[in-house]
Length: 444
Image 1 (cartoon, one colour):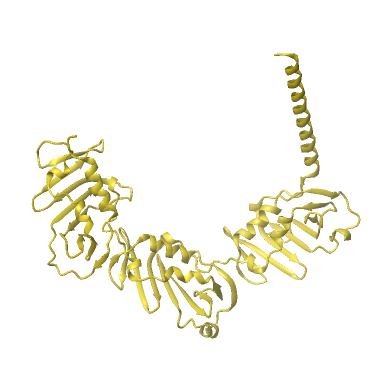
Image 2 (spheres, rainbow, N blue to C red; image 1 turned 60 degrees about the horizontal axis):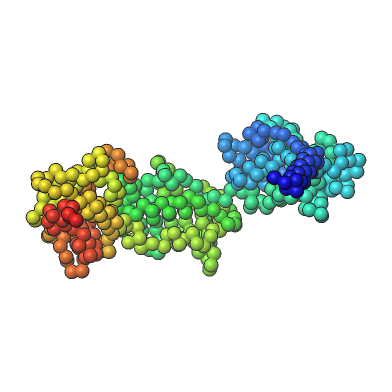
């Protein structure tokens, strides 16, 4: 390496050292400016008072949650309260303005615009009181101090925003809370139709207006929407007169939900382009998002499970397949290869063909339902699917399926666990083996 290159490397190295030194000075200067005004443990706070001029809000801790105690009694929005605790229990400031300010008026702290009092352990006196004055016009930070000393600091704008919310923002907007996993019965009345669903093994069943295995995804979506329903505005106290005036005696939607021994009811009405909701026990009529009722705009078919059987093809451990001319029994060995139990004979089973058949059955869906079969239907193919004790879907009973030959442009399928029949595409008949050789691997 020549001297010129060495000189260049030395210059680059010196430049890096200078940059590191400048960065260290900047960091030291930043640490001198920033600091912590408070260091309280959020879990010890059980009462909060927020005073903004003539406005006053009082929050009380109740169990693991918070209640709004003033100016009205209501559940508090947990995120709004948590935001206050996060930002003010360990209050950091951006810059110290004065260590001992003799004149507070210029900062708006002689008569503070906001006063925040934090109480620990149900004490009658606050553990600390934070005063917030005017905004700094340069960067929207706010002047602040503790009531106990005259050190004036600047705090970030977002911290003040936590305290500048409206009453509605401090309230819990949830109006129909429940745990969807605990739901056992669901009744929906809408547009003159009544749907009644009940949770049993292996899932939800539609009991009214027809009996059917229900589509779990549809029920889950409805339960999720109902449990997450929030008000976009609180209107007026729910008296008998006001409920009748809004039309809750003739609701657009009525939802009745049973969880354990508790039954919850929600009613929704519409006035022009606005939607309103009320549930017994809730003291006010609430306005809700007009899209909420879209979750309940369903027909009978929407609630029905279209799959002829719910299972995972990979979970099947045995197959018994019969036609007029065939009686086959196959098992999956520990290496997940299919072996023949009967009939006896030579030839290796075509695992891909068997797995394709199972996948086709797993995905097979009804085009229509035949709710009142005559009992005279003829089924030319039967399959019994057996499972190990534990499957991907949990413990599963065996599945028995019977399939007809072509009936018009459809095939009829019967699941022995259900009282109705499925009409499926006639194209599925091409997936059904006709002879034993169809299961045997072909020699290349």
